[in-house]
Image 1 (cartoon, one colour):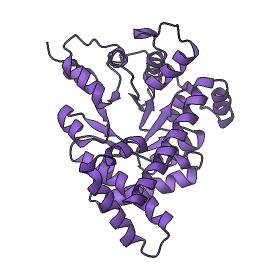
Image 2 (cartoon, helix red, strand yellow):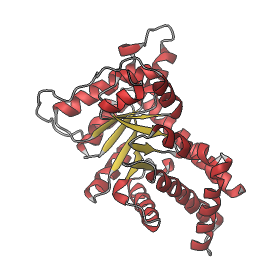
Image 3 (cartoon, rainbow, N blue to C red):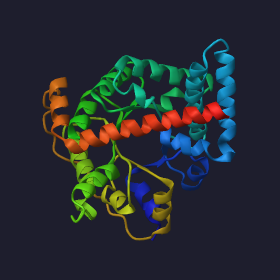
Image 4 (cartoon, rainbow, N blue to C red):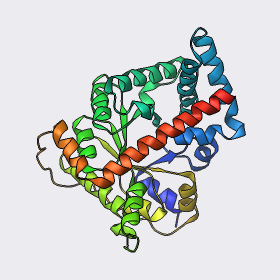
Length: 318
């Protein structure tokens, strides 16, 4: 029997959750996703530090009369694009590049940043139709994605922990959402350390299955891409999902195992009429009533913002 990674690729589009070019070359995913944390890990490796130098030189020449803060901010964006563009040379599909998490509650600033990133991709000669703009799924982020999608810019709504976030993203015609399976599990394990969350009882797995079925029942075209996995069992439990973005260490485990992978999610479900769209008040109330989603969304934004700041500090020191 073939390895589990090869079997999974027959059921689901496999995406690499990394900015490490060697890992992508090894496992040959369809797409790649990045975020500030992954970019920071990549640039801390000596073989990729020349990209930081290139980004800083670009910022210095472009903003010769700008402040240091302006040049560092531009260098960070340029670095994300340099890594994203190189990833595009290695995968045939999409590459996700994330908007600065510090803009998560500002729709207009998110839209402007998305256009700035795409301009940088165009300057690299990249096919911008293969770039997904990655935005935190706050209400403001979702509304920014609504506008961007209307402008023909595809978006990846990330840090999805609640059904309200998933539904509002689909109603905004987002191209793709990234529900964070493992981080949901983390929260429940902390609350109930003695509970059995193995296999299909994993709350992150259950959440993605619920969202996937809802999208298929209502014929939303928004892609569901499970993310943030803690183990390969979570991945196998979601075989058949539209996409799964997987870290290199779990890709390696799948490639080394030859046990059968069985389809768990099916798109052929009966149609159910689409309900009325969520209002902002309904969205915010449903988030308020979901402490797990509220905790993990804000924690995720804080972590990405902190790593963005670390990246900028690193660039200052180059």
